[in-house]
Structure formats: C-alpha cells, structure tokens
Image (cartoon, rainbow, N blue to C red; front, side, top):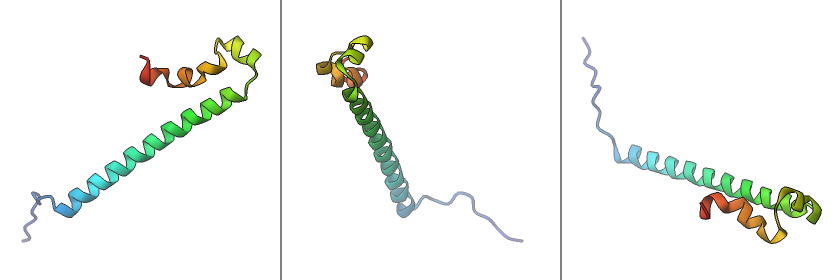
Length: 73
C-alpha cells in the first residue's frame, strides 16, 4: 500500500513564483488603468470646445474630469 503525504510544506521557489506572478498581475492591471485613462483624455481633447461645453467640461479641466475619482473624492 502506498502512503501519500498531503501536507507538503511550501518551498521558497514556489513562494517566490507566487509573489512574482502577483506583482506581474498588479503591474498589468495598473498599466491597463493608466492606458484607459490616457485614452479618455485623448478622446476628450479631440472634441471641440462646443462639444466639451455641452458635456459641462472646460478644456482646462479634462485631466481633473478623468482623474477626479482618484484625487478629488
């Protein structure tokens, strides 16, 4: 009959790999957030002043409008 051990201790290599992949995932998520906000800024900057006024945004306040949930909450 065979014995199977199910309480195998975590190895430093496995822990290092988990930390690396978690950091990589956080970095990719952050990159996608920044890219998304940059795309929003580009789209708003491409609009005319009349279009921005209809949205209630001044050209000088585009960055404020895009990032207000992070800094001005």
